[in-house]
Length: 109
Image 1: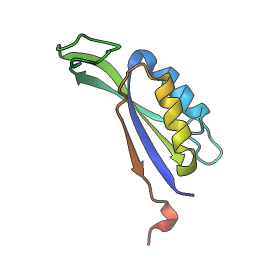
Image 2: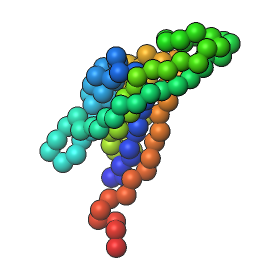
Image 3: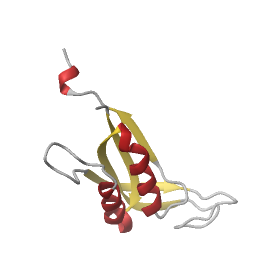
């Protein structure tokens, strides 16, 4: 089954909630292990524009937030459910995330 990697950027205050919801939706299964993820900490920067409803920050002002980059793998058939769970538990109105296709070791020659 084709696997994907989903990476999401979350304020540190909400990282456990987002990580748990993604795991519950089926992300992070590797062999006989569940809830497998990797996180790294950093600073997210953004400026809310007119019409935004920011969870953190003010319209027109550059904001810096301590965030975690959370990485999970999941199968393609679970990706929509995992992304929906991620967005549901994430505090931002615009969720920054990436989706990467993965190849299996057995596909290497």
